Image (tube, rainbow, N blue to C red):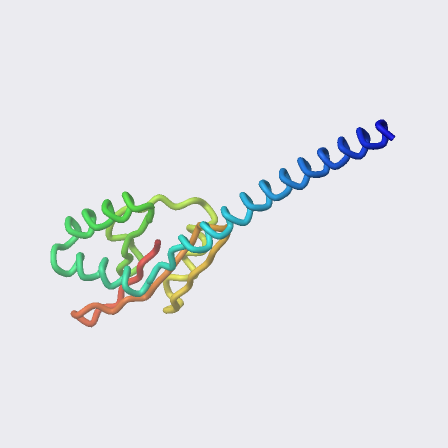
Length: 137
């Protein structure tokens, strides 16, 4: 009888530990997912484009360069295009340059998410002067 009690005790102890570890890992997993979900930031690309255009209209390329630097500090690489040319230089990778050549004359606003947490946005903006520019971020 004593050997059965001992065996049952150890089996229950092992299953209790396994259940605790399972709850610990699942809790950590769901907590991380919940935090990612609640802290996800939805960027208003139209408002960002308006800010860039306003900075350019009020202070020219220097003010736009300062705005670009502020956005870069917040993790957003962005610039305005006017007549197909960037008003402030931007770093672009190979495939992005090819896409940009198709997007510039299209007149459309496009938002892509090639991978989680990474966005590519191309937003048309018409300034107070009536001139249409494009934000690439």
